[in-house]
Image (cartoon, rainbow, N blue to C red; front, side, top):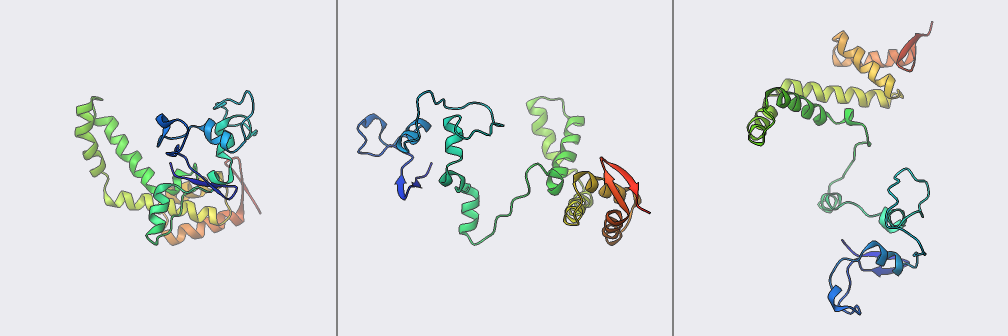
Length: 202
């Protein structure tokens, strides 16, 4: 872990070499120590409440630290390495695997693996490389186009169910790519899609 800035002061995430207990020098601090140094500790505060849906950000040590401004602002190591080399990091929205066509590629590979593996370790070592290589380039390109269709649908204001309907309609109709984009426009104009059902607007 790296040091951070709290109230304008550097807070080390490791015990320094002038800490009163030499046995802890250089070792990582725990949540309790970090919170005590920030004077946020209170009697009865537990380490983790195990309730990730909790709206109370003061319920446990973990949630208190997770919501500290300096912790919230901390970027991941991979992101920092990439940005330090002059590149941008653009994350896909969470819980939207349809926007990342590599997920479809993994799905096709795993499907092949399930059908052709004896579910032993040696069997997996043998079949996984074959599964990754057996997906043709044409299918990978089709996955990429499908992801782009979802992006196009979302950009035009469709919600998740409407986008799924539009992409499915395009795939079944066998339209060209330009026609598919036109179809999304027409779907948005002509139909009010609610709960996955179409209602024609006359």
